[in-house]
Figure: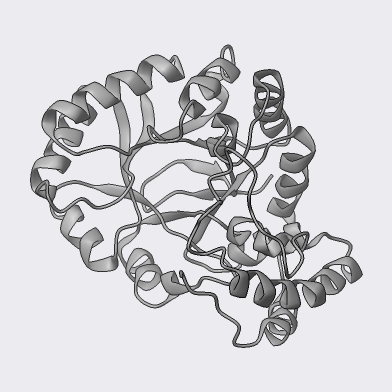
Length: 304
């Protein structure tokens, strides 16, 4: 699989990052044996980059079990999801190490900005962990460009994790230019727009599976589902004509943006991660991108 350098001074990582959120059951139940088999299939497919979080239910624990004997094959990221007090940072970090069965985290990330805790103090705690060798790098997620700049005033930030897909492009406005200019790598999430870009959900689909965190998601309104379905029918045909699935197209499309280092792809089965993993070697040409853009047009989705 293709590799890219993460940030100005970071290591090389696979352009597909395995997002292990689904392994914790956040998009419907999954057997532990299948979750572990899916993680192993990701490694076999050439994925060297894994991402999880404190807040992803049992994801860290399952990921840790899956990486027994394989930890050295993976650049392992997790996120601080809870509050950013000094006490919680210490507790959450040690819990992550224990659950992931490791002695260090490669990039440790703030899951989202929490202004009630001063960013100077929060970054200071992460720097202490970095100085102790427990964190290799520091990353952030869901920060604006201005919030990113503020965080970078107190520590070296190697990576940013924003939402990005054909349907949600807010990162293109300010964040991507900022990251390119300042040497911050990006690992984008939700390239399939929570499943809307898979083309498998009809215009009247309702997300109602018990345990699926998409239930009630403000992005997955009936209106958005209908709009996305109309576009995906055209994209399906274009992708098939080029020997790929619409899922692979959606992932490869994100990779075409020069600001994007890796695309986070979740999966609940080995077959799913093998399919998305194959998109890591599909490089869309300028003419490909123009044709896809013509199909998408000015369609954009909004939350709520």
